[in-house]
Length: 244
Image (tube, rainbow, N blue to C red):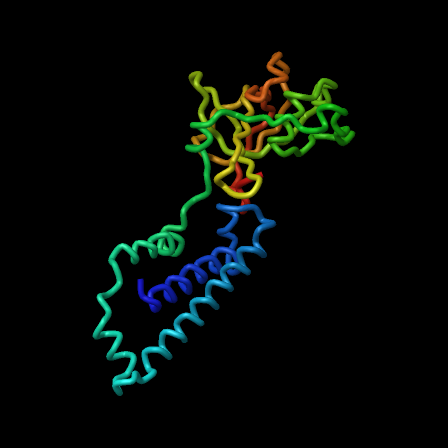
């Protein structure tokens, strides 16, 4: 691969990273919000490296050689061109600009099991919930309390959960679902809550569900899916940050 092509790829990749992290919030489809400064720094560094490489390549092309010819003539006399496969490296960049891949959603969640990681609080008790309700909660936090909290802090409490709908195995059944990431979309974990008492929204639709936990004995297991009896299901727009 020629130096000019490498410089061009550095500039384009760096500009793409800056496009999704500095000038928009598209980066939230791939990584956590806290990584934004690192993405901006990486994108800027790639652009600088590309510009420096382009300047060096241009200087070599214009510099005369010992036989009196310019570097440009020598380059064309000995270059065999850039391998076509090198240009395939531009495809991910074009995808960012033209296709704007969507965040992980219903398809990913439907093909993965719910994972309720046992929190450290499970050994010493969970923090008390607010005295008044309904209580807005992260879906993963609701799962953790429903599965691991032996004190039953959710009993009789009305909660508000937000997520997207995925169909359940039973006819008409559905899950309220959310994906949680630690670093990036590649490590996403799925949290699900089985919803009863409300009509199933379309697959992938974002909704806000207000309801009460329905204890059913499925506790103390990483793969347990808690049940929520819905008092109200309200459609909402997809949040800017789709992950918890």
